[in-house]
Length: 257
Image 1 (cartoon, one colour):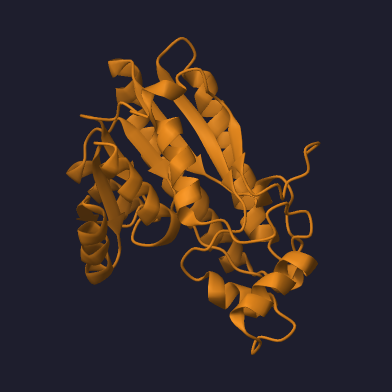
Image 2 (spheres, helix red, strand yellow):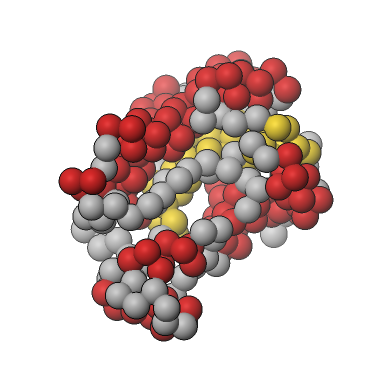
């Protein structure tokens, strides 16, 4: 299928590994001019070589980093807000600094860039903004409440901004991955495992049985599976999809949620 992304400029944040890198690869393969960003020059160079994307050294989790990125890339057709962090932590141990850090990285990074690029999209009467949220936005894990809060906030921003695009050819949507085999997932699974020294496949199996029993896949989603949906939502073919929260969660989220 031709996704008609030739001559489109896309910016993907959180793109030096995992889901973001696969999104960048897929958009490049579809003919888009893709820009990735990051804080580490070596990782950024490796990701650019692996994906065929252009690289900008900038961190949109800070106001200065976002300004640097927008200066380097003044206009985009497609913005994929994928940058995010996660961890498991008992609620009583989540500090003020934790709350602030998660909000800054997961929420403000995307809000800053959407604020910078949305007006130009509306003026040109075409654009796509995609927030990569999580199933945790709808069913908040009790050991990841600070993370879930940021993902729910992304849905609010996405839906509100979509309403502001009414009558234009600009769309704003969220994509909600479930547990995905992305960077750092091995350490995360060990952090919630009863036996962190068990074989990786046993830890993963136990995670789904204990922590995500509603998953219909009962396996980790591959980053390429997330990227395929994002690429479609970024394309002109998705013109009738706006203000949506699109699940690619392996069935983790109950239908009634």
